[in-house]
Image 1 (cartoon, each protein chain N blue to C red):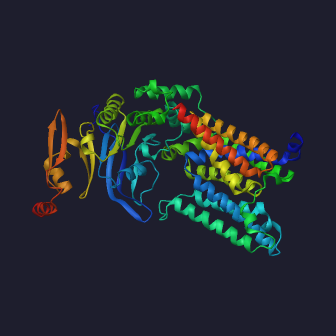
Image 2: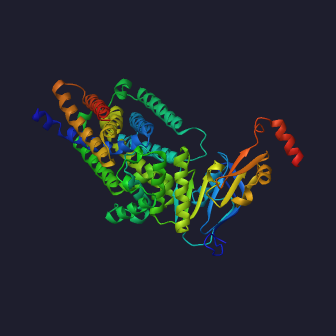
Length: 272
Length: 272
């Protein structure tokens, strides 16, 4: 069941997919389903292939094996890339950046007009950034830039929002601001959201579903089911503790285990 | 002075046309960090001119001895090579560009050394802008008009793929093809300018006015306007100074452009 009580409907199924670049394989045997109105975070260390999954969902790379099955035709995807992938030197205003989310609808040989400006302003209002419309994008803080990129993704009225490390490089307040905003968008509009992050603790209080990349493989499930001492310890191959504070689960490895490979090896052998 | 300008009217008009086209291209060169690409293409074009001279020295005729024909072919080959991006490449892009630059330079010198009637030092310093003929001017005019028309028509697309290629790709833009078109416009301008203006002036036009624009412009439109203005102003002032003081025209224009860029740097510093 979804948040609204409607039977879960799959939006996209990733079925036994292998992904890679050139000669190297990044991920193999990856399977999961994104339901309509899902709010899911894929979490794993840097380099585990989270961004590669997004690129496959965006159609930028093709699975070598397996299939990505879209259950709804012509799903409009809103994408929020990592800020570091932008050529940020261009002196664009915030509203110019948001209007880019409409470029494919404007078409060739045409420029954004008043209608597109209004649509961009409306998208800025979703992220409470109307007052920043005329400000230079390059001069905004990391959190403000992220909101602008989110507004750009929303300007196209997407049915699926994909975000690549949306809180990377942000301080605590900016991080919770962006995640609060995503949670609000999800709860108010039922927008399907998939984000990737390498910080498990950042997203645990926000997303109802998690996909975890660990050395033991990929696991996806409800956050409540996955975030237990036993499951996480088995998945990470090290003693992990989960505590609850202020209604959120916080995850941390047992002190000293990361620095003691012999103990980790002993624990693994014992578990086996 | 007016009589002298009348005498060199083709050269003057040709210089202004090359300056205008290079100013527009230069903004992309600077923001996209393609300075090495511009330098390598200019050097490849120069190698093409040397090859044409070498083949003519062997007694061949026709298109293989046309400086413009061979230079264009070699430059366009470079465009296709540099515009194509692949994640599989082991050699970083800047290293490939550096390799192309030095090899093209060395080949040009070797070919010039083995061509009867061609002096190596003269060849390396070639580019007498005052030597532009009526025929050259019409060719430069045709290429510049087409290139500027392409840039006006597809400004939105060039800006999008330059600022955020990932997002552009997710909205269905064929990023590789747009990049190829951008490189082709650069290659075309370089190829027709090189024989008349030489490596130094063409490369300077592709970088220096755009730097002035970046320093003074606070919006994308302003950056292009300042780049164009400073490029044309450098050409006019440099041309007049070179005639009045009997100095080589190309280097005088470069010196004026550099002075304007330095002035822009001071203004930007004081303003910020």
